[in-house]
Length: 166
Image 1 (tube, rainbow, N blue to C red):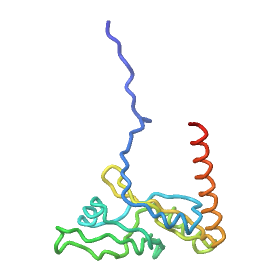
Image 2 (tube, rainbow, N blue to C red; image 1 turned 60 degrees about the vertical axis):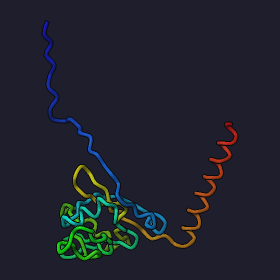
Image 3 (cartoon, rainbow, N blue to C red; image 1 turned 90 degrees about the horizontal axis):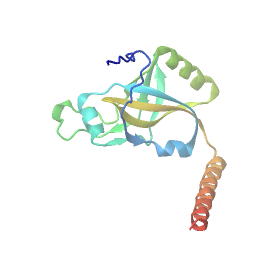
């Protein structure tokens, strides 16, 4: 007896492999992250090879909108060791790839409401390099202290729970 099963087409979800390369931990300390967006990034071949090697720094990076395009400034990608003349400037401005509608929305929020765009992480999604951008609002010093105090209190409670459950 033969059984035929319907073929599944259309709404089949595929797993995408994601490998995180760098994370901007300073951004979580200095800003409240309101929303997150994913953007592609325009890179040269030697820059991609350098990112695969893990030589990327997001510490002082920020994003801005210029002429309807989104750029990331201050992202340091070290030159590829075997790249000779094809290496680019390590801190050059790099164009981010997003839909025009999203760029306009972000530009309006940044211009009026006191938000800023900060790259939160860089990762590989399959073979493409992606940047996670956060729409952020700055923290005051007392906000930073409160966040540190809350994190320390949670660590202390976890330690006591762990001891209690022994």
